[in-house]
Image (cartoon, rainbow, N blue to C red; front, side, top):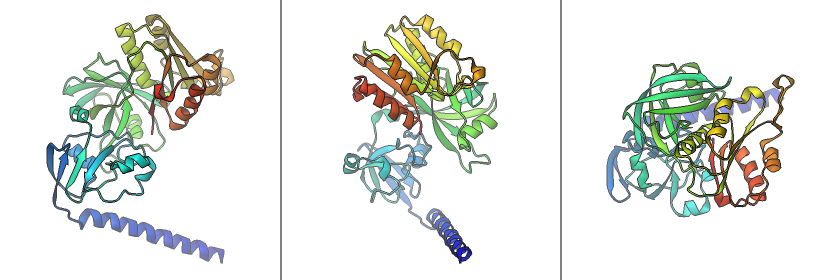
Length: 367
């Protein structure tokens, strides 16, 4: 009886999978939406072929909407205001939209298909985002699972960005991707190096882009990227700074520190960097150099699970515990966090308890 039940469930699952596949094929091949018009900010009009997502359609017209997850609907970054032609909000959009955003006609452009004329609003600064072609000048291992990729720009030959911002790197078709896909990576180089972009990319198991970078990308390869994007950058104030990161979350912090050193910004700053064991630490000499270059900067690495061979004499425990011990008060302090959503949520709880208001806590979540 139990075997029959399992067989029935298996058959139903197979039927559902086949029906889903047929619906996708039908939508791509049978449905013909013809040419439609997208009106942007009441000024710019695009005539495009209907049927694709708003995100990919705009990208084909060289209008780049931020999308940290590459259009999978998991990051919630690709929001645009759709005034006409959108239809009902989709279930895949709901987790990323607040009640106020839904009332204001905000939609996820990666989930919204263009089926008829559409009227949208996007921030004007996105018209300044460009697509760049470059070549991989250097690849080096920072840890066993993080690579630093240095890209020399060719066309255009220079990029202007704020320290802390990110770009979207294209992964071409290969065995894990049947079409080119984009993923967001923070720039780790200083903005003064306009001719290159440096990225720190951590391997994600079965990740389409990180697998390509770690196993296929080689020095001398041509690459495509677009940007810059993001609101994660150092605010102009005199407050003390608290930086918090782990793993490749170091990238935008390193860019900001480089910029501070070059501009001789002397604000008091603490950098809490969390890792499991000593093999997860990297760029330690560079961080010590920042302590020499910046007048009041302290780097505080911490290991949550040090092993005997680490011979570790520094801070231990969860990074939130270390922050709680080392940070006296949040008065006249602002914080910059980069890492996983879970890490950021835990750190915000500690920081607000120390007296840092949430409006002075800036963060860059890795989706």
